[in-house]
Length: 285
Image 1: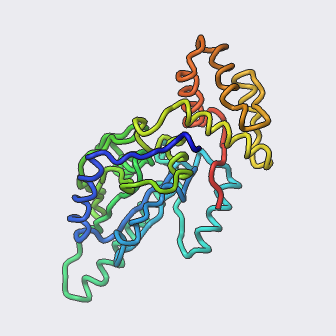
Image 2: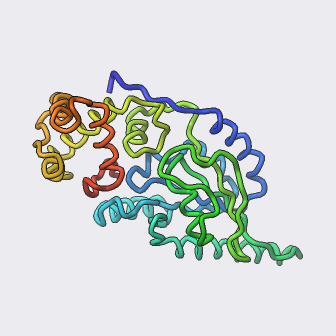
Image 3: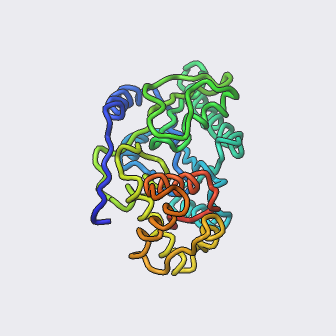
């Protein structure tokens, strides 16, 4: 990865963090959404500061893109850290009802304390927080049961904070995706690029696709996953060594896109992002 440096901190994210700082006092609960494929790489280093004194729900979205075995490993790992993970697929709605119930339970605890202090009952105010494109807005739309906020599988769709009412028990604050001002861990930055959890202007598609192929070679050599689906889909066996990955992509481009390696690189990444290559594990505890 010596030839690849990924940094992305556009103005709307910097502005969103300022707005977030001004809104945190109004929030009772932080619903943190991470990408189930890379749950560590989509954890914000400022999270502990943001959730200080507040209840916290950890949501791992895109559960459909990871295997049951990988889910079990991460579930055990998080519970070992004292954190209950809530798995969901916001696109299909699987697991969303359980998240809503957990948030409402948090509201009941809140209102019990308010009542004991002579204060009136009110809906729990929850901030939906996470990296770009991890599925925050899709989760909100599922909770509200209508497309009330803009949602798309690309980074940077949500630009401003917005409150959304969910029944009588829950108010959600939809926030733009937030990233650290500087990505010091370039391995995590690469995973963000592969999974489309960072703006595409931050990286070269062809370089990222080659690095993705190198990961698959390493994972296959470690018997963590099989690359046979790539051979079935593209008709070329994956190289045995990482140094041959760039040539593999070039050969594939010659066969499929008249030598346009950029287009072939984009197709490879899109196939992974759509789960067309199967449930490939990129990050394990």
